[in-house]
Image 1 (tube, rainbow, N blue to C red):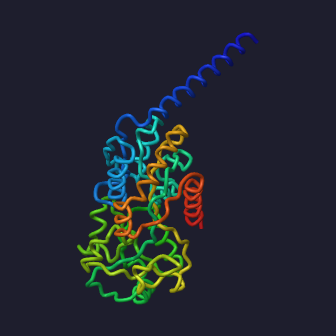
Image 2 (image 1 turned 60 degrees about the vertical axis):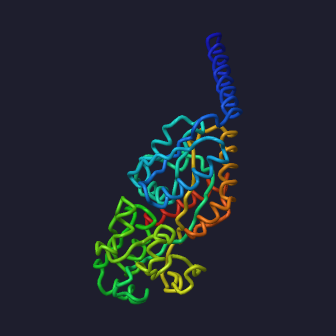
Image 3 (image 1 turned 180 degrees about the horizontal axis):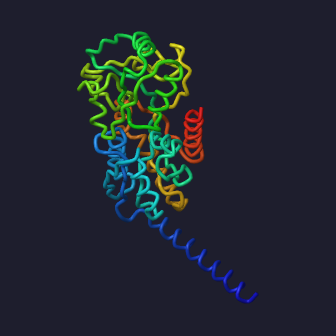
Length: 316
């Protein structure tokens, strides 16, 4: 009994020491640079978003925020780096829907419970695009061809197990079988149809905005129930009778789950403030991703809901 009492008392002392250390960290936070781990390569949507936020957050937090790209495994390489970093608020990472979908497909060893989402800062539906000189003028022509020629059309995507993959699987189940051609490098994916490497690309508009503005790409189909206000002439999958699970592409900033609450609150407030700046508002408008940031338990629940939706679709 005496030994047990000493052990228990020692545990209380250790717990108290950790609590005091965490309080000291939070009180003085931040007092040195915060690394932002972007979980995809340079030039992609996550990278552009991360760098834009890092620049604004430097002013909000008063410290430098260097960006490190750690690409691979649908974002899981970078998130493993984040998960295994000290949970002290000095390592933050991008966590996006594509990676959450990969967990449902058993890619990587990360889970939603490993991370604390600071805020969902971007969200947008995805489209199917063709090059300007494509033989397909309408979504109906595209679907008719895919139905009559299963497995002939190719689509550039961000990988297997992603919402891109789920969308194509769902279309194939309804008789519109197209081949998923993954590209890990964003730049290669963005230009695949232009170089004749694929017939189409599955992507959100913000990531290919330069090709839309130059007229090199034409959007044929939006995966949504409602038309997009910026693309009012593009029909929706719902209009065309496709039975889809509508999974918007979202992007967040996250920290390891064990990060102290006070540090999370400081970071969350800074991210929300950053999204209210003129610089961010101009950026999100240009990339068609503006939304009121989702934080706290609501953000965590959106991640879990998305994960469950992907998992259910892959099981069907």
